[in-house]
Length: 272
Ligand SMILES: NC(=O)c1ccc[n+]([C@@H]2O[C@H](COP(=O)([O-])OP(=O)(O)OC[C@H]3O[C@@H](n4cnc5c(N)ncnc54)[C@H](OP(=O)(O)O)[C@@H]3O)[C@@H](O)[C@H]2O)c1
Image 1: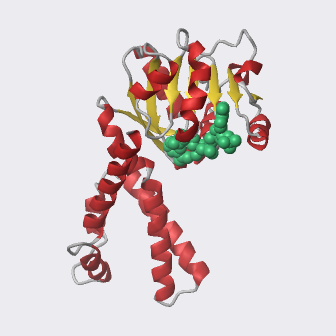
Image 2 (image 1 turned 30 degrees about the horizontal axis):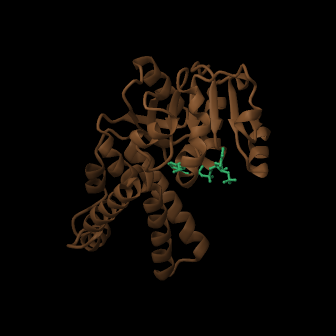
Image 3 (image 1 turned 120 degrees about the horizontal axis):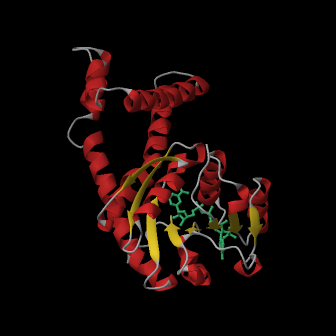
Protein backbone atom coordinates (compact mmCIF):
# COMPACT_ATOMS: atom_id res chain seq x y z
CA UNK A 1 0.00 0.00 0.00
CA UNK A 2 1.37 3.43 -0.78
CA UNK A 3 -0.12 6.86 -0.40
CA UNK A 4 0.68 8.59 -3.70
CA UNK A 5 -0.31 12.19 -3.11
CA UNK A 6 2.94 13.97 -3.92
CA UNK A 7 4.87 16.03 -1.39
CA UNK A 8 3.24 17.26 1.81
CA UNK A 9 4.10 20.19 4.04
CA UNK A 10 2.40 19.94 7.43
CA UNK A 11 2.05 23.22 9.33
CA UNK A 12 1.41 22.49 13.00
CA UNK A 13 2.27 19.14 14.60
CA UNK A 14 -0.22 19.23 17.46
CA UNK A 15 -2.73 16.50 18.18
CA UNK A 16 -4.54 16.69 14.85
CA UNK A 17 -1.42 17.32 12.76
CA UNK A 18 0.33 14.27 14.25
CA UNK A 19 -2.80 12.10 13.92
CA UNK A 20 -2.95 12.94 10.19
CA UNK A 21 0.79 12.42 9.72
CA UNK A 22 0.66 9.04 11.47
CA UNK A 23 -2.18 7.98 9.18
CA UNK A 24 -0.20 9.05 6.10
CA UNK A 25 2.92 7.20 7.23
CA UNK A 26 0.89 4.11 8.17
CA UNK A 27 -0.72 4.07 4.72
CA UNK A 28 2.63 4.13 2.99
CA UNK A 29 3.62 7.78 2.52
CA UNK A 30 7.35 7.93 1.87
CA UNK A 31 8.75 10.04 4.79
CA UNK A 32 10.95 11.78 2.17
CA UNK A 33 7.74 13.33 0.84
CA UNK A 34 6.73 14.84 4.18
CA UNK A 35 8.10 17.90 5.94
CA UNK A 36 6.65 19.76 8.89
CA UNK A 37 6.88 23.17 10.51
CA UNK A 38 6.37 23.27 14.27
CA UNK A 39 7.88 25.99 16.51
CA UNK A 40 7.17 24.29 19.85
CA UNK A 41 10.38 22.42 20.77
CA UNK A 42 8.69 19.52 22.59
CA UNK A 43 5.98 19.05 19.98
CA UNK A 44 8.54 19.22 17.16
CA UNK A 45 10.49 16.45 18.89
CA UNK A 46 7.35 14.27 18.99
CA UNK A 47 7.06 14.75 15.21
CA UNK A 48 10.76 13.96 14.68
CA UNK A 49 10.29 10.80 16.79
CA UNK A 50 7.69 9.76 14.19
CA UNK A 51 10.35 10.11 11.50
CA UNK A 52 9.09 13.45 10.18
CA UNK A 53 11.60 16.03 8.96
CA UNK A 54 10.49 18.92 11.18
CA UNK A 55 11.76 22.50 11.25
CA UNK A 56 10.76 25.33 13.56
CA UNK A 57 10.25 27.97 10.87
CA UNK A 58 9.47 27.85 7.12
CA UNK A 59 12.74 29.69 6.36
CA UNK A 60 14.56 26.49 7.41
CA UNK A 61 12.87 24.36 4.73
CA UNK A 62 15.09 23.18 1.89
CA UNK A 63 14.79 25.54 -1.09
CA UNK A 64 13.93 22.64 -3.39
CA UNK A 65 11.12 21.29 -1.18
CA UNK A 66 8.12 22.08 -3.39
CA UNK A 67 4.96 20.73 -1.74
CA UNK A 68 1.92 19.59 -3.68
CA UNK A 69 -0.06 20.06 -0.46
CA UNK A 70 0.24 22.53 2.39
CA UNK A 71 -1.75 21.17 5.31
CA UNK A 72 -2.72 23.83 7.82
CA UNK A 73 -3.25 22.29 11.28
CA UNK A 74 -2.64 25.19 13.65
CA UNK A 75 -5.11 26.64 16.15
CA UNK A 76 -7.62 29.13 14.70
CA UNK A 77 -6.23 31.90 16.95
CA UNK A 78 -2.79 31.84 15.25
CA UNK A 79 -3.92 31.17 11.67
CA UNK A 80 -3.86 34.84 10.59
CA UNK A 81 -0.26 35.13 11.74
CA UNK A 82 0.92 31.74 10.40
CA UNK A 83 -0.83 31.20 7.05
CA UNK A 84 0.65 34.22 5.18
CA UNK A 85 4.12 32.70 5.71
CA UNK A 86 3.01 29.90 3.37
CA UNK A 87 1.37 32.12 0.74
CA UNK A 88 4.41 31.64 -1.52
CA UNK A 89 3.23 28.10 -2.35
CA UNK A 90 -0.14 29.22 -3.74
CA UNK A 91 0.97 28.80 -7.38
CA UNK A 92 2.17 25.20 -6.98
CA UNK A 93 0.24 23.74 -4.03
CA UNK A 94 -3.26 22.94 -2.91
CA UNK A 95 -4.00 23.91 0.69
CA UNK A 96 -5.83 21.56 3.04
CA UNK A 97 -7.01 23.38 6.14
CA UNK A 98 -8.38 21.50 9.14
CA UNK A 99 -8.60 24.74 11.13
CA UNK A 100 -12.03 24.86 12.75
CA UNK A 101 -14.36 27.68 11.82
CA UNK A 102 -12.23 29.31 9.12
CA UNK A 103 -14.05 29.56 5.77
CA UNK A 104 -12.29 29.25 2.42
CA UNK A 105 -12.79 32.99 1.77
CA UNK A 106 -10.97 33.85 5.02
CA UNK A 107 -8.13 31.46 4.12
CA UNK A 108 -7.86 33.04 0.66
CA UNK A 109 -7.50 36.41 2.35
CA UNK A 110 -4.39 35.00 4.03
CA UNK A 111 -2.69 32.99 1.27
CA UNK A 112 -4.00 34.57 -1.94
CA UNK A 113 -7.28 35.15 -3.73
CA UNK A 114 -6.66 32.47 -6.34
CA UNK A 115 -5.35 29.76 -4.00
CA UNK A 116 -6.86 26.28 -4.32
CA UNK A 117 -8.14 25.41 -0.85
CA UNK A 118 -9.89 22.42 0.68
CA UNK A 119 -11.45 23.05 4.07
CA UNK A 120 -11.99 19.94 6.17
CA UNK A 121 -13.34 19.04 9.57
CA UNK A 122 -11.86 15.83 11.00
CA UNK A 123 -12.56 14.58 14.53
CA UNK A 124 -10.53 13.14 17.40
CA UNK A 125 -10.99 9.41 16.61
CA UNK A 126 -8.60 10.23 13.73
CA UNK A 127 -5.93 9.50 16.36
CA UNK A 128 -6.86 5.80 16.07
CA UNK A 129 -7.67 6.03 12.35
CA UNK A 130 -11.41 5.87 13.07
CA UNK A 131 -12.10 9.52 12.35
CA UNK A 132 -14.91 11.09 10.35
CA UNK A 133 -13.80 13.94 8.11
CA UNK A 134 -16.01 16.19 6.05
CA UNK A 135 -14.44 18.27 3.28
CA UNK A 136 -15.41 21.22 1.13
CA UNK A 137 -13.45 22.14 -1.99
CA UNK A 138 -13.14 25.84 -2.80
CA UNK A 139 -13.17 26.94 -6.43
CA UNK A 140 -10.01 26.08 -8.30
CA UNK A 141 -9.51 22.70 -6.60
CA UNK A 142 -9.01 20.25 -9.45
CA UNK A 143 -10.80 16.86 -9.55
CA UNK A 144 -7.51 14.95 -9.14
CA UNK A 145 -6.73 17.09 -6.07
CA UNK A 146 -10.08 16.06 -4.58
CA UNK A 147 -9.16 12.42 -5.17
CA UNK A 148 -5.78 12.96 -3.48
CA UNK A 149 -7.46 14.80 -0.61
CA UNK A 150 -9.89 11.91 -0.10
CA UNK A 151 -6.81 9.70 0.29
CA UNK A 152 -5.14 12.16 2.70
CA UNK A 153 -8.17 12.36 4.97
CA UNK A 154 -9.07 8.71 4.34
CA UNK A 155 -5.79 7.72 5.97
CA UNK A 156 -7.41 8.55 9.33
CA UNK A 157 -10.96 7.30 8.73
CA UNK A 158 -14.05 7.98 6.65
CA UNK A 159 -14.45 10.98 4.34
CA UNK A 160 -17.54 12.77 3.06
CA UNK A 161 -17.65 15.83 0.78
CA UNK A 162 -20.15 18.66 0.97
CA UNK A 163 -21.03 21.04 -1.85
CA UNK A 164 -22.31 23.85 0.36
CA UNK A 165 -19.74 25.34 2.72
CA UNK A 166 -22.49 26.67 5.00
CA UNK A 167 -23.19 23.04 6.02
CA UNK A 168 -19.79 23.01 7.74
CA UNK A 169 -21.36 24.59 10.86
CA UNK A 170 -23.78 21.66 11.22
CA UNK A 171 -20.97 19.21 10.42
CA UNK A 172 -18.85 20.79 13.15
CA UNK A 173 -21.78 20.45 15.55
CA UNK A 174 -22.33 16.77 14.72
CA UNK A 175 -19.06 14.97 13.89
CA UNK A 176 -16.54 17.61 15.02
CA UNK A 177 -17.96 18.09 18.50
CA UNK A 178 -19.80 14.74 18.52
CA UNK A 179 -17.05 12.66 20.19
CA UNK A 180 -17.52 14.83 23.30
CA UNK A 181 -21.24 13.95 23.39
CA UNK A 182 -20.36 10.27 23.28
CA UNK A 183 -17.71 10.66 26.00
CA UNK A 184 -20.37 12.39 28.12
CA UNK A 185 -22.71 9.46 27.46
CA UNK A 186 -20.02 7.09 28.77
CA UNK A 187 -19.49 9.24 31.86
CA UNK A 188 -23.23 9.53 32.51
CA UNK A 189 -23.81 5.79 32.04
CA UNK A 190 -20.94 4.96 34.40
CA UNK A 191 -22.21 7.44 37.02
CA UNK A 192 -25.71 5.95 36.73
CA UNK A 193 -24.22 2.46 37.14
CA UNK A 194 -22.51 3.54 40.38
CA UNK A 195 -25.76 5.13 41.57
CA UNK A 196 -27.48 1.79 40.83
CA UNK A 197 -25.03 0.05 43.17
CA UNK A 198 -22.14 -1.15 40.97
CA UNK A 199 -18.46 -0.71 41.86
CA UNK A 200 -16.77 2.14 39.95
CA UNK A 201 -14.33 -0.08 38.01
CA UNK A 202 -17.11 -2.37 36.85
CA UNK A 203 -19.32 0.65 36.05
CA UNK A 204 -16.61 2.13 33.80
CA UNK A 205 -15.95 -1.22 32.08
CA UNK A 206 -19.65 -1.67 31.35
CA UNK A 207 -20.12 1.90 30.11
CA UNK A 208 -17.06 1.93 27.82
CA UNK A 209 -17.73 -1.45 26.29
CA UNK A 210 -21.46 -0.96 25.89
CA UNK A 211 -20.98 2.31 24.00
CA UNK A 212 -18.10 0.96 21.90
CA UNK A 213 -19.84 -2.35 21.14
CA UNK A 214 -23.18 -0.75 20.31
CA UNK A 215 -21.41 1.81 18.10
CA UNK A 216 -19.56 -0.93 16.23
CA UNK A 217 -22.77 -2.94 15.83
CA UNK A 218 -24.64 0.11 14.50
CA UNK A 219 -21.82 0.77 12.04
CA UNK A 220 -21.47 -2.77 10.74
CA UNK A 221 -25.09 -3.99 10.86
CA UNK A 222 -27.35 -3.82 7.84
CA UNK A 223 -30.14 -2.71 10.17
CA UNK A 224 -30.74 0.92 11.07
CA UNK A 225 -30.04 2.16 14.58
CA UNK A 226 -33.80 2.45 15.12
CA UNK A 227 -34.26 -1.25 14.21
CA UNK A 228 -31.38 -2.29 16.46
CA UNK A 229 -32.95 -0.29 19.30
CA UNK A 230 -36.34 -1.93 18.78
CA UNK A 231 -34.64 -5.36 18.68
CA UNK A 232 -33.43 -4.95 22.28
CA UNK A 233 -36.72 -3.48 23.51
CA UNK A 234 -39.10 -6.24 24.57
CA UNK A 235 -42.61 -5.06 25.37
CA UNK A 236 -42.95 -4.54 29.11
CA UNK A 237 -39.23 -5.18 29.64
CA UNK A 238 -36.35 -3.33 31.28
CA UNK A 239 -35.11 -1.49 28.16
CA UNK A 240 -38.59 -0.18 27.47
CA UNK A 241 -38.78 1.19 31.00
CA UNK A 242 -35.53 3.11 30.45
CA UNK A 243 -36.39 4.33 26.94
CA UNK A 244 -39.69 5.71 28.21
CA UNK A 245 -37.60 8.05 30.37
CA UNK A 246 -34.99 8.85 27.70
CA UNK A 247 -37.55 9.44 24.93
CA UNK A 248 -40.07 11.47 26.95
CA UNK A 249 -40.69 15.12 25.99
CA UNK A 250 -37.49 17.04 26.70
CA UNK A 251 -35.58 13.74 26.76
CA UNK A 252 -32.51 12.66 24.80
CA UNK A 253 -33.78 13.36 21.23
CA UNK A 254 -34.93 16.88 22.19
CA UNK A 255 -31.74 17.55 24.16
CA UNK A 256 -29.57 16.36 21.26
CA UNK A 257 -31.40 18.67 18.84
CA UNK A 258 -30.85 21.65 21.17
CA UNK A 259 -27.21 20.72 21.74
CA UNK A 260 -26.41 20.40 18.02
CA UNK A 261 -28.26 23.65 17.28
CA UNK A 262 -26.24 25.44 20.00
CA UNK A 263 -22.95 24.10 18.63
CA UNK A 264 -23.86 25.06 15.04
CA UNK A 265 -24.84 28.57 16.18
CA UNK A 266 -21.51 28.93 17.99
CA UNK A 267 -19.66 27.71 14.90
CA UNK A 268 -21.38 30.43 12.82
CA UNK A 269 -20.45 33.07 15.43
CA UNK A 270 -16.79 31.97 15.48
CA UNK A 271 -16.56 32.14 11.67
CA UNK A 272 -17.58 35.77 12.07
N1 LIG B 1 -8.16 18.05 17.76
C1 LIG B 1 -9.31 17.89 17.11
O1 LIG B 1 -10.13 17.05 17.39
C2 LIG B 1 -9.65 18.73 15.91
C3 LIG B 1 -10.78 18.40 15.16
C4 LIG B 1 -11.06 19.16 14.03
C5 LIG B 1 -10.26 20.23 13.70
N2 LIG B 1 -9.18 20.52 14.49
C6 LIG B 1 -8.40 21.69 14.13
O2 LIG B 1 -7.06 21.30 13.99
C7 LIG B 1 -6.24 22.40 14.34
C8 LIG B 1 -5.18 21.91 15.29
O3 LIG B 1 -5.81 21.43 16.47
P1 LIG B 1 -5.00 20.58 17.55
O4 LIG B 1 -5.99 20.00 18.47
O5 LIG B 1 -4.03 19.69 16.83
O6 LIG B 1 -4.23 21.78 18.27
P2 LIG B 1 -2.80 21.76 18.93
O7 LIG B 1 -2.54 20.43 19.54
O8 LIG B 1 -2.68 23.00 19.76
O9 LIG B 1 -1.83 21.89 17.66
C9 LIG B 1 -1.53 23.08 16.99
C10 LIG B 1 -0.02 23.09 16.80
O10 LIG B 1 0.36 24.16 15.93
C11 LIG B 1 1.55 24.72 16.46
N3 LIG B 1 1.87 26.06 15.97
C12 LIG B 1 1.68 27.26 16.56
N4 LIG B 1 2.21 28.25 15.82
C13 LIG B 1 2.74 27.68 14.72
C14 LIG B 1 3.46 28.16 13.59
N5 LIG B 1 3.78 29.46 13.46
N6 LIG B 1 3.87 27.27 12.63
C15 LIG B 1 3.60 25.98 12.77
N7 LIG B 1 2.96 25.45 13.84
C16 LIG B 1 2.53 26.28 14.80
C17 LIG B 1 1.27 24.70 17.95
O11 LIG B 1 2.46 24.94 18.69
P3 LIG B 1 2.31 25.65 20.17
O12 LIG B 1 1.87 24.55 21.07
O13 LIG B 1 3.67 26.17 20.46
O14 LIG B 1 1.28 26.73 20.03
C18 LIG B 1 0.71 23.31 18.12
O15 LIG B 1 1.72 22.34 18.26
C19 LIG B 1 -7.13 23.47 14.98
O16 LIG B 1 -7.33 24.53 14.09
C20 LIG B 1 -8.42 22.74 15.23
O17 LIG B 1 -9.52 23.61 15.03
C21 LIG B 1 -8.85 19.80 15.57
